[in-house]
Amino acid sequence: MNKMKIVGIGDFLIPEQYIKQGFRNFEEAGQQVETIQWNLKDYEELQSINLKIEVGGSEVYEPPVEIYEAVQDADMIITQFCPITKKLIDSCKNLKVIGVLRGGYENVNVAYATEKGILVFHTPGRNADAVADFTVGMLISECRNISKSYRNLKNGAWVRDYDNAATVPDLPEKTVGIIGFGAIGHKVAKRLHGFDMDILAYDPYVKEAPDYVTLVPLEELMKKSMFITLHMRLDKDTERMINGELLSMMRPDAYLINTARSGLVDEKALYQVLKEKKIAGAALDVFDVEPPTDDYPLITLPNVTVTPHLAGGTVDAFTKSPKLIADEMIHLFKKESSRYIVNKEIFEKVMGKWTLV
Image (cartoon, rainbow, N blue to C red):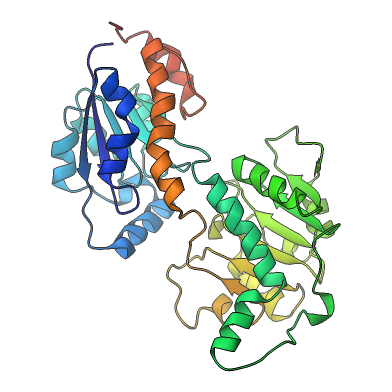
């Protein structure tokens, strides 16, 4: 392969120096690695842009001119959140590969990249440990009233009697249902297996599971589980999949945990079952509107534990992402495929046009 130019676009969470460090193997292989920082006002602006892209796709935000200038002669572009639009792709005369430093790739116009014969990589599971840890913490915090007790005590109130006082559980032998059994779902199951819980899972794309996990239909999971935790990808097939009908199947002592995407759940229906105490509670890290206002319906309920979209945010998750994807992309030098490639259908055709040296 002729010498390639790799350009990494850093942001608030994965700054350009992380990308430079992660792609050291490319430099050692004689490739040119450059980086640029996508400069935004603050983290809130980054989150605002991300939410718009999750809803509207990569074309809803136009990258600044300095990004165009930095990548115009790049063979590979590495990004976490900066959008890679049709216009940006057309401006890059040498572009062969786009790498996304997270599992989701809504910020890349994958369809157009595929049409142009450009491979798209993502980094599935890069924050799987972070989200799995957080999920277990949220589950325990809600059912044992940890965050509520903290808030009350800090405000001078000694409260020991909560709405779920009659059903506060031990975890062993309780049933947890995991909806979405990919990298994160597997890690959540492994952790909760350590609590001696009975584990059910639903995922239409998964046919096998560890011996301590039972795969079941979605309706059965909703009816049997005391705890239900969501880990599906958000797409047109899963949007609002947890609707009023499914929520009505939950046990009265059940809890819903969502550290994935708010769009998986019908928030109005969830608010109703919580307000009417048809389920015991919920623990939510994601919302349709972020940040939610003080009077946001779900925030106002006493039987809900809430956090500000923190689940995937650990230093380890951000620092290791560039190396994870670089270790996969380096296989291209040997014309080897990778499980990280999104548009695998064009791999053979693309590789046939590359010249190795």
